[in-house]
Image 1 (cartoon, rainbow, N blue to C red):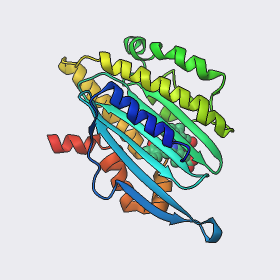
Image 2: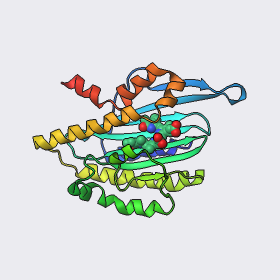
Image 3: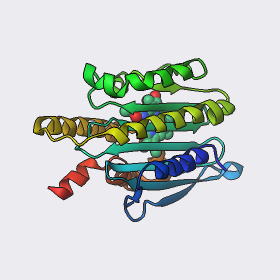
Image 4: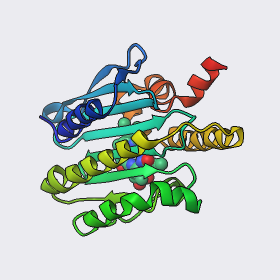
Length: 248
Ligand code: DBV
């Protein structure tokens, strides 16, 4: 069992308990990928496994799980709602590297600075955020340009102790996921054309940023090469533009 497997198992079971969960296609060749890295005694196999689901309201629920021994564990899990809902993204970036753990957990807003949007999608989760602030303090250094994509309830922390990840981070992950599915349950489709256009633009802005600045790009290129990596990023992890092209 690896550090983030319980998070993934929990999320899948929980989502099934809340929604009719259908599978979302993973492009051939990207379901699971292995590479051997390191030299001599330090050789490890790094396996990246992909998961994809969808529901009536959620266009793509996808996870990338990287397992490369104790010093390399990553679970990147993002939910992209359909474009006719004003729902935020659910975003979890759970990263363990030789330097330690790095945890990002948030419901990333479409319209960060709109009071109405904040009242609807951020204020209800602030009490959850605050309940973890003591155990999961602010993680420091953070790319300034990314801040526009995070909510005021952004949990960003670098626990030095693995037990914190297994306990408090896992608990926070469960609370955020529950709160997210509460939002999903009450979400009503948007019909106003101007609002729909604004949602599409906000989703594209977010997606382009994430695809362009993906902090895992360097790691994936080292393990699996440039071609595989770019196709994984644009064809699966952040695929909205491709999907829009195939519809229009
Ligand atoms: N991050 C991803 C995907 C990953 C992934 C798809 C499948 O978006 C992993 C893998 N994140 C990953 C790795 C690192 C980070 C770091 C491997 C470590 C990179 C390294 O140190 O070499 C949140 N993730 C980070 C960082 C942030 C995030 C802020 C630190 C990066 C830095 O210091 O430059 N989540 C990430 C992010 C957004 C988000 C930037 C933006 C909206 O939602």
